[in-house]
Length: 238
Image 1 (cartoon, one colour):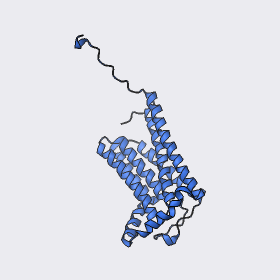
Image 2 (image 1 turned 180 degrees about the horizontal axis):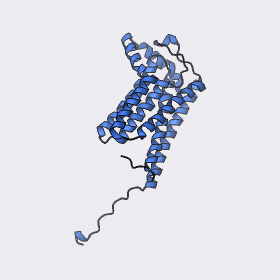
Image 3 (image 1 turned 120 degrees about the horizontal axis):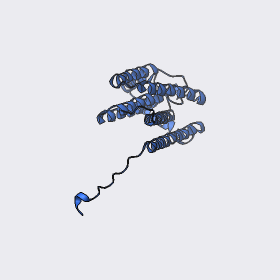
């Protein structure tokens, strides 16, 4: 048969909108569920003083053994950036920059929802669990007196930095910008959590739970946003 007469091979069909919605929803809910289950395991370990909670004291002791006056000062300065005012300022500045560049109102909506949820989880969690912080004799001043579980600095840093990374990934075209945003968010959240343990302001499990809860909240918000972008009434994503 003449090559010109041969039928061209059939191209694979792209998934339809319903398939995309189902796939995004399923993947998002699986990730969310796994993070929630992991967080529940940490919570049970804390309330029953078993499992990963057995690492709280050894990890804190290791941190104490590696403290120096210079490192104490540097890490205290860094951890102070995780307080409410600096985090709000960072979110406002970076969201403002993204909005100026992309003119997308969803930037503000997503960040407000993410931040309000994070603060609410922190307040409710501390009040519900009522866990004491490590002894002040093991901590670097200034001392903190609120309840310990979960770590608010870690939770809020994870959520705000993670949402900024997602917004950048969604809107930016350049791959290196997307990759840099993700690396920066992960580094910020990890460093903030470790700083809380190093300073003796939180136990390891306070921080691990905050990481898991923050990522679960982000997974839920990102999944919902991606689903909304693909509904027929939604404006197409950039």
